[in-house]
Structures are given as structure tokens and as C-alpha cells.
Length: 386
Image (cartoon, rainbow, N blue to C red; front, side, top):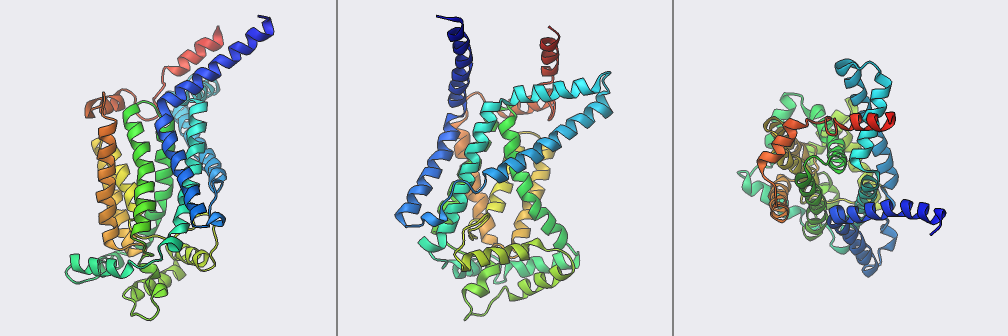
């Protein structure tokens, strides 16, 4: 065997080993993401909805989001080094920290998972646009009556409304509701790159994907409904019990931004024109905002008490906000919490080996967020100085 062949063999073996390790450790989640994407393609062809199907909606957005998150992470670590650690050679330490992060996260693993999730989210968005075609919206009246039955004959939004208006909380709730996107994307990105709690990490990613599949697609198709904000548009001949709420939100949005109103109009325009675009697809039951906020709480409960308290409080804000901003019936939130909890504990049973509450918290104490791979800069420094 010649020198050139030996060199090629040395280059090939690490790649093969890295791919095998990736498939061994992440094969289940990759298979789940790709299987759903493939199933959505099959559904599109069965119902002749090829024009509404695409796997390339979110890869570009994913790259932008990744760049922003990496920039924030790098800035935070750099400021910590400069203000807290204060090394003699700050630039070198920052570069070593970046190198340690790259080594710890694993470029092949991270890139593969992010790419698979971007395809998956594109498939989810495609599937949601199928819903009114396969099963037209017709459950809204049922959820309206269910809300009243469970809340003493009153519409839950009226119960919430007086308190929110008196305390002028509409705008803060709207801000926190929109913050949801950055939190759920940021949490997913963090779990992809952070390997300190491997079992918890796997539980989160699998539950995250299943929440979208079960709640965001299958149950949304079964219980096809548009939500309170569209009640008057779907049933123009009926009295709209949400008319006063939507009038209030429209009035408030004239003075201060209530992004929910603009987003609701945007989604309805896409629906009316049968257009397929970023974020397209209307479905109320169950609420994905509540589902993923509750999943963050269930995950936080495995990490630390105060983080769990914050996550629980935030999930309750999302429940109230989903009703006050006209997106959901309150029963949407109830069902989301129930199904997400079932998904979480089912996944925990599947990934139970070698895990308990103690190791997760021990890992948190030994390597607090941002400290994973603390020895890596030393290893990198040793390698660089050899």
C-alpha cells in the first residue's frame, strides 16, 4: 500500500468512525425526524397536495437562528472570561474556549441534527397546511361549548380579560408569548450541543419531536379547529362570542404593538388565498405554544428547583396568553398539558436506563451551564503547545 493510500485511509477511518458513532447515539431521533418527513410526503401525494409540501422552508431560517444563538453564546462566554476569569491572555483563552465548544459539541453530530430538524419543521408546516383540506375546520363550536361547560357557563376569555385589562398586562403577555419561539428553539439548540446529561437530552429531543407530531399534526387534524380569533370569519352567520375580545386587541394594537393581531391576519390571508409560506397552517386544538412550554417545565424539573419554578410560571403565562390573545380555547391548553405529559413519561420509560433525578442534578452542580468542557481549553492548550 502506497503512502497516498495510507493517507487516504487515515482520512477515511475517522469519518467512518464518526458516522457510525453518530448513527449509534442519534440514530433513533434522526430516524423519527426523517420518517415523519417521509410520511408527510406520502400524505401530500395521496391527497394531491404536492404544491403545499416542501422540505426547504426552514433550513435557511435555521442557519440564521443558529448564527444568532452562536453569537449570543460566544459573546456571553467572552464577557465571562473578560469580566470574571480575567486571564492573562484573554484572546487566546477565548479562542481556546471556542475550540473546546466545537470539540465538545461535535460538528458532524450538530450539523446532522440541525439539518434533520430543519427538514422536520418544514414537514410539520406542510402538514399543518393540509389540515383544512383533508378535514375542514368544524370543531370550533364544540370547543366553545366545552369551555363554557368547564367554566361555569362563562367564556374563559371574559374571566381572564378583566384582570389583564385592569393591570395593563396585554402588551407584556404579548411579549412573553412571542418570546416562546426563541425559548423553544434555543432550548432545542442547547440540547443538541450540550452532552452533559445524555439521557435527559435524548428524552427532550424525542419528546420535542413527538409533541409536534402528535399534538401539532395528528390531533390537530383529528380535532380540526381554527381558534377564537377566526370564529367570526369561519361562521359569519353566527353571533361571534369573541367579537369584543378581537375588537379590544385591534384597538390596543393601534397604540402599542400587539403582534398577535398582525400574525392572525397574515395566517388568514394565506388560508384564504391557498398560499403556502413560512408559518402557514392554522390549527387551534391542541395548543403547541402550551405543549412546548409545558415540555420546557417538565425538562427543567429534572435539572433544578428554581429553573422548574420559572418554567412553570412561564407555561402558565402562555396558557393565559393563548386565551387572552385569541389564539386558543382554554381547553386547548388543558389537552396540550395532558398529552405532553403522557408523551414525556412514555419517552422516559423508553430512555430510563442509568438515569435518575440525582445524576442530572449532580451534573448540574459539577458543570453548571456554560462550564461543560471546562478542561477542554487546557487540553486544547496542551495540544497547541506540543
